[in-house]
Amino acid sequence: MFGIAGYRPAWLTGITTVAELAGYLAKGPIGPAQIRRILRGLEISDGRPYTYPLGDAAARLLTRKGKQ
Image 1 (cartoon, rainbow, N blue to C red):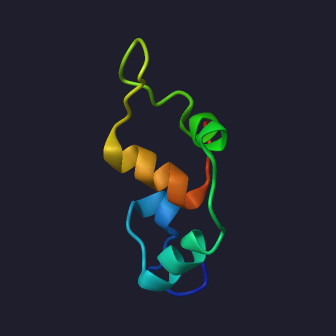
Image 2: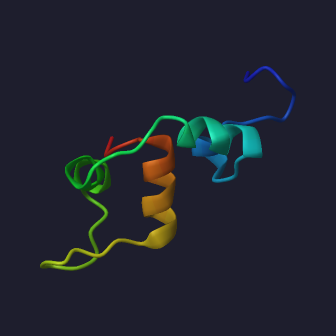
Image 3: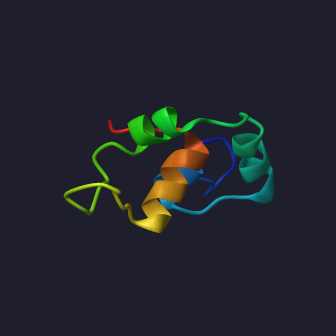
């Protein structure tokens, strides 16, 4: 299904390889407004400053996947 037997993309399993991380980081820097947009829906606080669960926020930022 995914090419290599048993391999699943990080966004499905929550695990990743060094090569995948390097690819994610190569996408370049992002600003605060883009970060807020990507993390929309993950907020765990009602007001400013908004707080986010670290693992979920890091995964979304690395993969640049916003709320689906």
